[in-house]
Image (cartoon, rainbow, N blue to C red):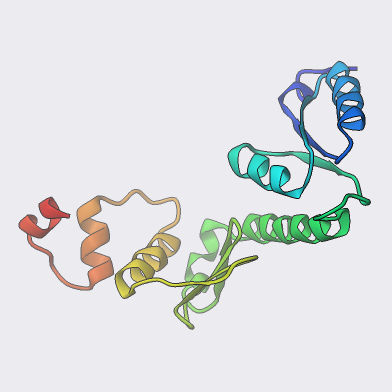
Amino acid sequence: MADGHSAQRRVLVVDDDPKIGRFLKRYLEREGLRVDVALGGEQMRESMCTERTDLVILDLNMPGDDGLTLTRELLARIRSVLRRAAVSSSDAAKALASDVRFSDFCLSVSGRELRHEIQGTVPLTTLEFDLLALLVRNAHRVMSRAQLLEQAAGRQLTARLILQS
């Protein structure tokens, strides 16, 4: 039965057989879910990058990116979401000396490194890293552009520099 809460949920069916994908889509839509179908791993990744996905139904025996490989990718995303949920604004002080996880990323403040779950180390300039660390330390706090630049650069910036940036 469809209810007000399930109508908001998005299910992604990943199957290389279009007939199975259409069947599952019709069935789940009758139950009040929003359903998209991807015919393989590449379409799954594209779909998950463009829209929030609440549930993935995955064919394990697909050619190319098989279901087990895709399951590993999904597991990395799940772990990332669970770690992100564990970090709260009250943990901001701890974040200065530890790794901070958000989305598919891990920021090592002490190691001055940003890592992506799948792609590995992300190169950052000193200013980019300092800005990111500043944002992590000040989660849920509104800061002006001038405050961000001044604190990340560690020095007073002139109005001219702020206007030119």
